[in-house]
Image (cartoon, rainbow, N blue to C red; front, side, top):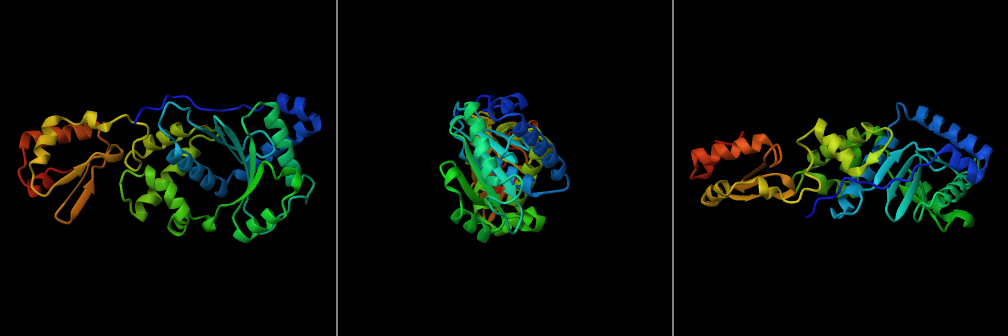
Length: 310
């Protein structure tokens, strides 16, 4: 697996660009919309939950090649502005509505108009294949909105369901398999428990909150790992085995019944009905010292090896 280079995809929006594309009135509306969204975001959780989910989804789908990492931002300047995921071949704009009822054409600034404005603006900025999505927390509302979508925006629009879970990210993980699926590849374990997945989600929420102005997906994850270093697997590492010494591997291979691996950047083991994952990844000084201890003590049985574990 090759290392992803430290670049990301982003398409900056300015007030001047909006004014040039859609006029002064639309620009004033977009600026007011951003200020209102930023203020309304204080004390709310739905956007944070969704941004963390999109972080996990983007990371789990990333090829870890030399492609640029997607850039994720929330509360942007624009018309579909709650979240934007910039990829090399798509700029996906999301509007979040944690409500029980809403229509495409109601209100002073209809969603249909916002979606049309956003595509016009994104096209003028040469964003690749821009799209617009309305995200709601009610499945019945999602189905209703899909059935009533105006023809004028169908070519570039979608409606997605994303739950709120009464404000509990624990519930989101425990109750929704599609959230579990995107979190699982980011865990340090090959078969993570529900508790581990909840921890992964919590760390990603923290990572998004550390970047209120947005960041590349890998930087969000790395920031989260700096604060909570033992919950996420390693992202974009070429081969963690390069940190493992041949002497260490030779000793482990001679212990009857011991099975071990270095998946996701962490050393894991199992034997005689017990298993575990080393608390920090293989590149750390702590794991280096553990290897030195094993080499010095040369355990011949699993009991002896287990006694050396921290």
